[in-house]
Image (cartoon, rainbow, N blue to C red; front, side, top):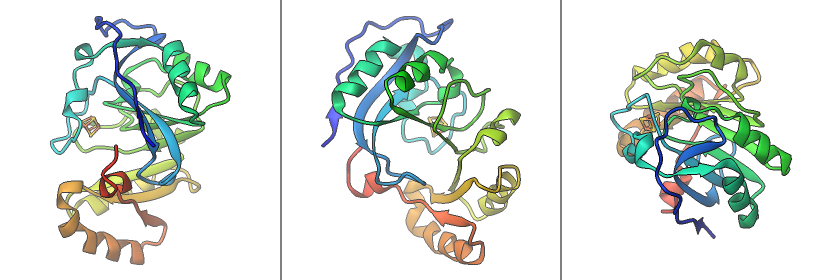
Amino acid sequence: MRVQTVLTTQKQDASNLSGKELPLMEEFYSVQGEGYNNGVPAYFLRLAGCDVGCKWCDVKESWEADAHPVVHVNTMTERVLQSGATNVVITGGEPTLHNLDPLTRELKRHGLSTWIETAGTNELTGFWDWVCFSPKKFKVPHESIYAKVDELKVVINHRSDFRWAEQHAARVSEECQLFLQPEWSRRDQLMPSIFDFVLTHPRWRISLQTHKYLNVR
Ligand code: SF4
């Protein structure tokens, strides 16, 4: 069952934050619907602020950090623990805009697994058990991300994106898990070509947005 927490912390200027307080758009307990950890229960912390600007973004309301309340990392951790979750997904927005050292240190101090979903556009801070890198054509990733990636997840929006996906795959480690995921609004048109590509490029796997099929967050 999902647990939705109402955010009541007062809005503050989201700039110049030490990382002890972070702009939080929403938080909920659900299952990871995508990629390697698909189907695994996890608590989601969606941080606000994004410097990418994908035209097909389905959380555009996350883009403006100042439009969301600022929450202390201790408060976030308490809410995670109250939910009973053992895994925490830090997502956005683009979470690398923020100093994630204090949040991930606090989560790990309580034995929680820390996962991140990032387009890698800024230097990655924090302490991670799983790094999912999902590059976007709208902004070049920071060079340092490639050495830290456990999972490469590329959203396919056009047939030309397969070549682009391979270019990123060539830069991550051999152990990195590779996923292709259709852009949701064009999934019916794109799935046949993704299916064929995976058969001929078996290092890749298909990622479906299970949570959208289940109509949960
Ligand atoms: S990186 Fe994520 S939050 Fe930012 S625009 Fe792209 S899809 Fe939206």
